[in-house]
Amino acid sequence: MSQHLQAAKNPDKNNSPLLLRACRNEVTERPPVWMMRQAGRYMAEYQALRSGRTFMELCKNIELATEVSLQPYQAFAMDGVIMFSDILTIPDAMGLGLSFTEGMGPRFETPIRHIDQVAKLPIPDPAVDIAYVPAILKNLRQALGSDTQTALIGFSGAPWTLAAYMIEGGSSKHFQLLKQWLFEQPEALETLLAKLTLSVIAYLNAQIEAGAQVLQLFDTWAGILSHAQYERFVLPYHQQIIENLIRRDEVPVILYVNGSRGLLDLMVKAKPDVISVDEKTALGEARKIVDPNIALQGNLDPLALYCAPEVLKPMTQRLIAEGGTQGYIFNLGHGILPKTPVEHVRLVVDTVKSSAVLPVS
Image (cartoon, rainbow, N blue to C red; front, side, top):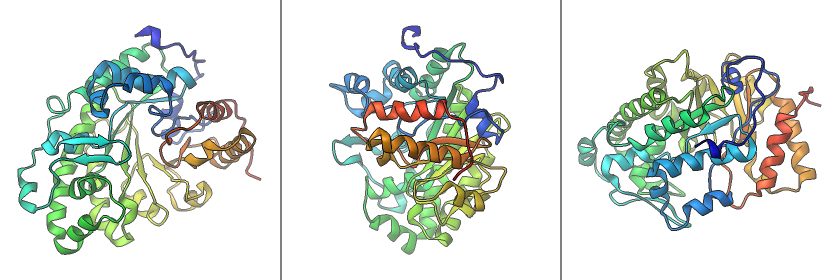
């Protein structure tokens, strides 16, 4: 796979990858940079591989998913390579029948609509039921080879977000069915969340064994909850997952919640190594709430990547200055959107990589 690895890397003085050092809240010579959904449909190389295949076919094709994962690394020399996959691999492995429809997002053939279904759900064995994911990570670890400066990132959807998709049967604007479970049968919802938590723990531990150096836990829809609801239906499961990961002293965990502005104090209680902040919360505001021993990641608005370079570059520079050089990772507030100009992604990455961090004006 060496023909795919043409992005030259300048080794840092410290042999540990820059991203890992930032995750550990160390002072770094510049912020590391990677982007959520950095491997995907905004890139022509991805579109060429996707042509004639469904999204899940691409995800489960180990060689092609490896190649897609490496495309942003080749194009932009990102500081992190995140495996190409989806947050819904666990419910798919539980037998719910995951598919993706253009313009509609994910759909489950068999959504969870009754408590009796929860008891029948298996806890997937990652080595058997989701074996393609550890295989992709092993491929990526081998492909990165002697590049000791680029960190390999694994991830999973978090229990609340997985439950949201499983109960709704797909994407939703209002989460009516999910909220009905929360209000009418909270114990049944907790039973589902507990089973998903065990599944996520096994899944992430398998990723660590396969070579993941950093993990991100995505709870995309936890931001729809009140403070008290989050404390009951999200926080205990985040805590259980993070506490039960192997090699916690070696593999840092990034926690991402979309719409987390009023929930940051609870996110801290899960004891992640990094909290990823969405674009609706200023980094300075987050830093006042987040434990100083926890690093921050974020949080350029993904829509800023559509802006003209003379607007985008100063926005990037201001964010770099605000984040500083201790425990800060440059990223987006959410994932890269379709039709994002590739040259704008390159501009942001190059700006971060050439940055000299100055005080925020």
